[in-house]
Amino acid sequence: MSDPKDDLLDAALAHVPFDGWSQATLKAAAADTGTDPAAAQAMFPRGGIDLARAFHARGDAELKAALSGADLSGMRFRDRIAHAVRKRLEIAEPHREAVRRGMTLYALPIHAPDGAKALWETADTIWTALGDTSEDYNWYTKRMTLSGVISSTLLYWLGDQSEGHAATWAFLDRRIDDVMQIEKLKAQVNESRLLKPLLAGPNWLLSHVRAPMRMPDVDLPGRWTMGPEDAPRG
Image (tube, rainbow, N blue to C red):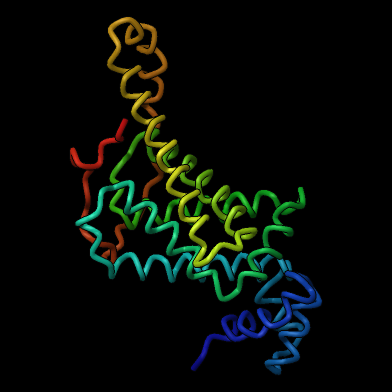
């Protein structure tokens, strides 16, 4: 038996290009599936925004499944991240207009927190699937940085008309290289004899930041650690 929420979301996707992620779309989806309007509203209490969040969560679930079944051990770590971000956009490709409408919705101040949460969840899906074991402040900084990479690449992708989105993938590679250079600079600063004493206080505070508790996921791939081949170039 199919999930009524999935059925409503599938039906809604046909209306989103015309009505956006809206109450009108939810009503149309309910009519298409023969769902009682009150029941549809109960499944998506906030209407269009809850539909949009369900659409995003479905994409993240597909990404998690794709990454858990992929052997990326032969890739440098930065290439694994690029692969994951690209895979997430490829999952969204069949419903590109729905993604565009979602970006418009999340741009509204009232829904900006939902948009930020959606980006964070995608970044967390990627880092978790790639075996991130950080338990300190790095857990937060990794996801915050990757959220920035994802959001800028997504905006570029929406306007990209190049063959096979080649321009988007080149843009993504540049953004990840920029991040890797920042990480290289951070390492150099922390190792500096001159700056190390100045950073003792901030580093002590950061050392007491802990990642949130998480339940183990048996479907995830084995833990990966960054090797010498993953070090930033340049």
